[in-house]
Amino acid sequence: MKTLLILLLLSLSLSSQTLEETYQNALQHNYQLQILEEELAIVIQQEKIESLWDDPVLSVGINDIQFEKPLSRDLEAMQNQYVALSQSIPLSNRLELSAQIEEEKQRLIKEKQEALKVEISTKLRKAFIEVEYAQKRLEILDGYIAFLKTPMQLLRELSAIEKGTVEKYIKTELLQKKYQLQRQNALEAIEVAKENVELISNRPVDTFEGFVGSNAYENQTLEGLLTQVQNNNPKLSMSEILNEVALKGVALAKAKEQADIKVTAGYYQRLDRNDFISLGVAYPLYTNGKQEKQRVQAMKRVNIQALTVKETELRLAQALKIALHELKRLKQESEILNQSRNKIEALIRNARLNLSTGGSLVKYYELFSQKVENALVLNQKQRIIALTENRIQEILGEKL
Image (cartoon, rainbow, N blue to C red; front, side):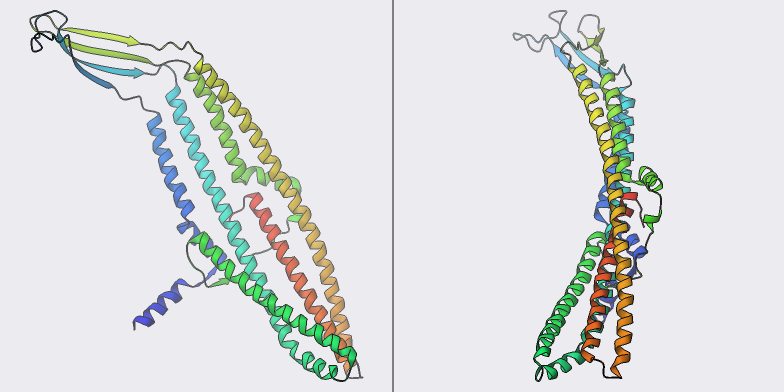
């Protein structure tokens, strides 16, 4: 019974999942997303903290203790006990600016969350793509490996009587071993995809359901795609938010050039004499130009961040253009392979018809080998097309 229960639990945990189900699972269990949620909570609280004044300072003391009579408190007028309260009062809007910076940091973390969701989507799509085309490769290879058993037997028999057939037999045998190795590689690719999904979603997956749809990005206008990058790419939004933070940093540095004042009020008690109250105001003198230098530093950070925004825009735009060029080239090559497949199919049909009139069976199997090789190359080309489209989706900031 215990063994049965364990097997049942394993079957429930290792289940078949669609891409959307895997994505939703990843959103719930991804550690990095959980970390960002905690960071967001910290920054939200920090915004409240930044808007608060400094805490007041309470002072208690005794003045003029005589060494000869340390317990006497009525020998001189200066002898007193006091309690004082000090409070720093900001004269600028630095607290409001500090709170606004924390608010911008909240936006930044939210964009980090969006960027992570895009990254998760990209990695999950990649895993599903790898599985889809590995399975297609397995179908092609399994069919051909089974098909090769007949020509291998024929070539083995012919090689005993025909020297020219020996070379074909050896080549076919090597081809069979090559495809068996490719089959093993395809199985390993599926296992790697499973491990990657578990790394992203923190949950194992047994089998994959469905496939990643194709997007005809090469048929869309470049201007429209670049607009989508501007509007949706979270990395670009992050650089723009950091630019806003830098600008507010300049305003904050300027506000800090206006010093805070410190007000102190104290009550002094004296024995046999009148008590009194003391009031004082302290104002720092900024004579070394430290605050002005900090503002200059903040302005330099604005320049750096403005350049970062431009660099990010350029990098994303060029990455998109390069990917689109690659996609067009890959689809043209894929079309050529499709045309070659059609020609090979026609040759195979003709060779099959000739078999009844004394045509070469070896020639027929050689053509079939060309068909399989074409199918493998075409499958690999389509895999690269799907991965390129996935890369474009990442640049566009598309999530599942």
